[in-house]
Length: 232
Length: 301
Image (tube, rainbow over all chains, first blue to last red; front, side, top):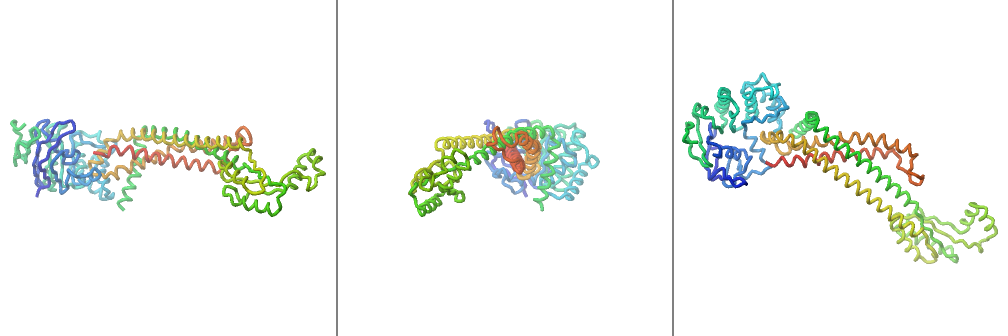
């Protein structure tokens, strides 16, 4: 079953640049997919359209049964509750503790205190930060901050985890740590994972499905792909 | 249950955020405070002006002189006809016969007494009168004209000219002060919206993260609106203190009037509490409007 379906999707920004030309793509439930491509390939735009930060100019996008292209502004939260999103710059709240940052995602959907507590501690355990619940983000290393962000993304048990350059700010060692956590979530919970990256090392090492974009077009979709120079 | 829980969270977050963003909160609060002080002063001024004009207007009297040859029955009909005019205050129609007037005048001065002492009923050149108060002072001349048409009424006097001008002046003073208060409140709203926009701008990131983790617009807006109301309430504390302690002090110092005992100030109790309540409500509403309009901008993708 496909959890993501794109049909004839085109995205043109207001300044006239076209980021995506006529993209057709299906992603199966439970899969682990890398989206790679050079800068300007449209991979970030694709990601933004999946969580409805951007609307496609043309075409149809269905994510987890929701027609994203037609989703009204005030209903965007319905989509976001099905997704966990991780960014390169972590996007944590600096004035809140690790616990509060993760609990935030539970509170805004109206979970009870006990439920929040159980789920937050579980999520922090998965990312290996149970001993740092009372720290503030600026007291943590980059890798640890990204792990908090992952905990926040998975705390309400989303169907999909979207990661936009999750290791972009980290050294290779920490990057692998982060990817292992993401892989574990994919395996243990069956969460569909999409990772946008340009980190060759990781893509080659993990041997997952790789979708390659080039200048706004899909050029390659391999089940066990690698990051070839010719693709970029 | 869920709504209650989220409302509780909104209120808790609002309080937390006031203290966590203390310097910006202080900026908003002081902006609200200063404008509310000005609003409070203009409310007090406009209430006093309209109170004063109303008091003067209440004292306006129309005197109706009855013709000398009117019989008692005719006087009774005049009274009935006066009662039919809607602008006339029904309870304040006072009849005085010329005999009563003569006696009153005699009491007032020795000279009158000497002159009038030997007038008898037939010689008395004075006229029977009705003294009338009106409900709407601005319609006094129209009412006077209506009275003139009544049979056996010889003269109607209310201090024409002078009174008309005075009433026109009062009406325009009232309009000007109401306009000033309204304009001030609008300026306050505008100022507060801008200050709160500043505080919310600094939390753009927080709002975008809330949207990312699946908060509905309602969930995002509520804490900000509660915070705006809270800021408005905090901002109204000093203006309210100024009203509660300042106005009675002013009242005592002026002995309750401005320049002449004719121009009375409104008694502080319960006036200051009414004004305080108004200030608090204006503060809360303005804070609410300010923050909800400021946050709306960031709720579009």
